[in-house]
Amino acid sequence: MSDPEDKNRVAIAKTAAAAKKKAAESPDARGAAARHAPEPEPAPPAPEPAPEASAPEPAGLPVLRCEHVFHRYPRAQGGYQLVLSDIEVLMRVPDFVSVVGPSGCCKSTLLRLILGSETPWQGTVEAGGRLVQHPDRNRGIVFQRYSLFPHLSVVENVVFGLELDETWLLQKYLTYPWYRRIHRRYVELAMEHLRAVKLDEHAQKYPHQLSGGMQQRVAIAQALIMKPTILLMDEPFGALDPGTREDLQVHIIEAYEQHRISVVFVTHDLEEALFVGNRLLVLSQFYQSEDGRPGEGARIVMDVPTPTTTSTGDKQRGEFKEFVAEVRHRGFDPAQRQRVAQFDLRAAQS
Image 1 (cartoon, one colour):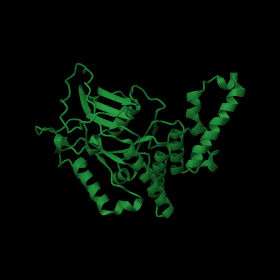
Image 2 (cartoon, rainbow, N blue to C red):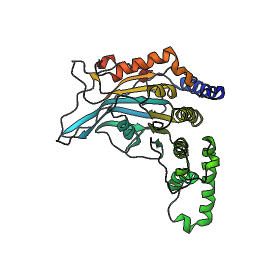
Image 3 (cartoon, rainbow, N blue to C red):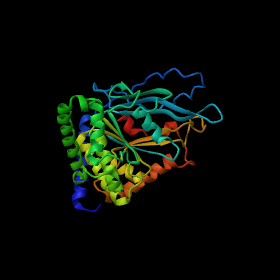
Image 4 (cartoon, rainbow, N blue to C red):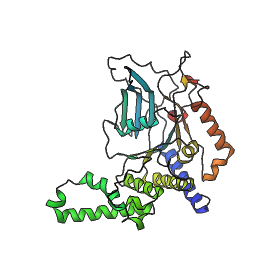
């Protein structure tokens, strides 16, 4: 993506986002909450202390709060395996958070807990001050594989969620004149979103007539039309070629700035994570407790601001490469298991 115009678009979007974020943030402290009473199973290890800020929280409700979240799955041979241990995430204002980690660290599981399709074993997940118990329209999601209906056209796919949420099945037949007017309004809104992703000329095509990158653009429009407070993205560009991938990286940065939504972006690509996000969470099972025992269940071992970038060319900068190397060392190397007190959680405490 060497076009100067694209570089300027990224620079404007990320600079504006950083300025707004800095203006909106104020010092606060991560609140401490008692865990839910455990089931009659051995309780997980007590959370180890980590440095915390001491200032009060702002009056506004946080966009997202995960407090002392533990999650487990049953083992085939009996008992349970702890997969997430004492997860704490606080997003005070709309932010773009990238999540990375080694294979098997349950990044997608964390995303499902935020979405509400799974409930944590212990701890709480709140969005906008409300306990997350099931999926709703305030949290949209884009998967790696395109969540499109093959029998619907592009514009019908984008309209589908909005129409399903705001109308009921028999309205189409019992109140057809009213339904026709409201449907026309939905289609106009869908076309606005398709223009934003440069697909308005393909509105009447079907998913099989589009390339992979075009289908993913439709999926993004499909999620954004619902106006979610938090957009969850689970390796959304993993199956795309490098050129298309970089184009969509630019687009999602622009969408974040335009719609002022929070984005939680899971990826296995460290360079992509640092480029699109303003904040990086590193989830890892490679750590040890303060008494030297291997950790059980993945924890957030890094929560840090990302380097400032203005174009994809910045990925070749020495500072950028050094950051990638540090993340690999701290979170991905089984031989370098840092202790809990050594976790770098600057962004969580700012």
